[in-house]
Length: 312
Image (tube, rainbow, N blue to C red; front, side, top):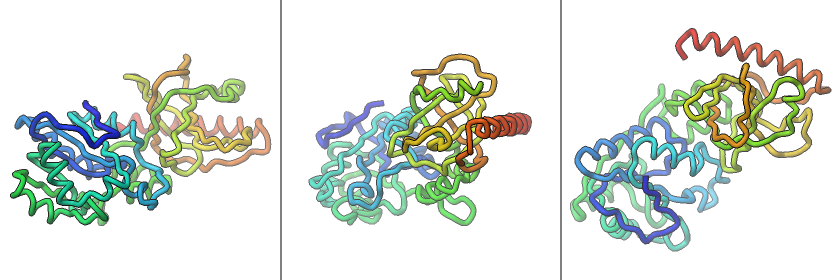
C-alpha cells in the first residue's frame, strides 16, 4: 500500500475509486463504505482512501485527540483490507481555507483522478465544512465521476458511528463494542519491560504502553486474547497504573498469559479485550494483590474454557 502524507503535492497515476472519511475506529459502517471502493478494483480502478491528519475535530479544538484507532493501526487495517493508496491529507490553516469547489476540482478530480467516489450521508469538506453530498453530486456531472452515498448502518435502533463506539468503550461494554466494530477492541505495540513484579509473584506478565492518543476503556481487569504473529494466547489483562505498587501516572496494558513459557520482550503483539471483569483497585499490600490476581486468573481460565466450548 502506498501512503501519501504530510504533503498536498501528489498525483494518483490512474483512475481511482475513492473513499473519504475520518475512519476513527474503522467500524462496520466504515467497512461497508470501503467495500464499495474495493469492489471497483475489478474494474481496474485504484482503491484510494482519503482522510485528514490531524482530524478536523482535533485541528479546530473540538477533541483532545484520543482516538479509537491510532494512525498506525489505521494504516495496518487499510493495508490488510486491500487498499492501494492511503492519503493522509495535512489539515492546516492553508488547506482548511480551501473552498469546497476548489477541493473537488483540484484534489478529487485533478490530483486523485476520481472516477468513483464513496462517502457517508453526512460528509462535509472544504472551508467551514461547506461542501456536502449535494455539492458532490452536483459537480459529478462537471468532472465526470460517479458518486455513491452510503447509508448509515444500524445496531438496534441507533446508527453505528465513531461516537457510539467511543461511548461504549468508555463504559467498558466490550461485547457491544465488538458488535459495532465487527471485531474486539484492541491495543497494538511492542512488548516492553515492566517492573517484573508479576514475575516475582510467580505470574509473569507482558507490558504494552499505549500512545497518548489511544482511547482507553475504564481502568481495570479484562479477560483478553493476545496475538503474536500467527499464534494466539488467552489471558487476563490489567489496564491502569497498578496503584498498589506504583506511584506514577504511566498507564500500561499488562497481560498474564495462562501457562505461557517464553520471552516476548521486543515482539509486536495485539491485545484484544473480550470482557470487563472488575475495576482497578488499590490493595493494602502485595499479598492481598497476589490473592486477587490468582482469583482473577482462575475466573479468566474458566471464561476462556467456556467460550472455547461455545465456539467463541
